[in-house]
Length: 356
Image (cartoon, one colour):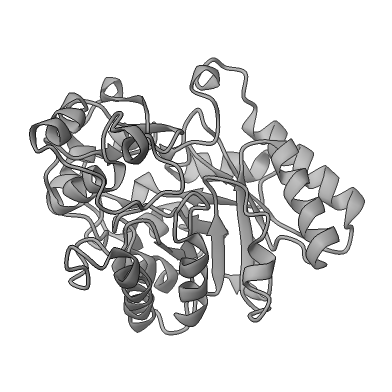
């Protein structure tokens, strides 16, 4: 029998976290339905104001927290008793404000990646029931976070997500030249972190979650068999009726083939995995439209600082709205396996047939 997942004070029926997909790919609808089915539903913070009806072209940083809370409200309307959380990238310029908004909106779990969330416990000290979950790709990063939180804030992570840069989608926490060369051992890292936590904090029972490359039940069972306490899945939930993206975005997953998926360097300074068929149009769009950086959404961004590459958030926004010709479609390596539109419930039925 597959065991429930305990994250902090919350027990989740199934050991599955829906990955956070920014710029309204995983908004209130997807998060709510995943939580309703017994997983952890995640609303992603990055670019949440865009296409929200709250952003008027001039008030991005004012609209962001309000749009974030609106999506959390939507998710709870779908799953009033569900475990609903958020993903907030450390690299965001309004990281601290979005963490505060997540708490105000009732998030039960805060997941942070794209940087080390070394100060997260101080930002959430007034909400001790909220579970805190960092994303790492190495044992060293996990150890650094655990030591900083333990010594500085008398707090431990409530779970740790180990993301595999060789298979995960979106922004990746590894150097471009080290991705896909066969040297990364995700489950070796999972087991190393688990052994460290068991030795240093034997009473803590901190689950370690595998992210990247999980598509079906065989992948899930393999992850659990290799030592993970649960999995994080994102790409699998895109071609669903409940996903918050436009139909064209979802269809891009269904239509793509394995060779269409690859790496590009984001202006955020991180590699990213995406469908690359139309990637040349990203930079061309900003050049043709002479688009300046209007949002300053990232703490560090080569497009903001020198006009290099392209505007990451507006390219993701265009794709979310259905413009996959000039927009950026992030995905994991398994996106090509999508062959039809489905529902969140059907995915859960396949992953957990004995419990359904």
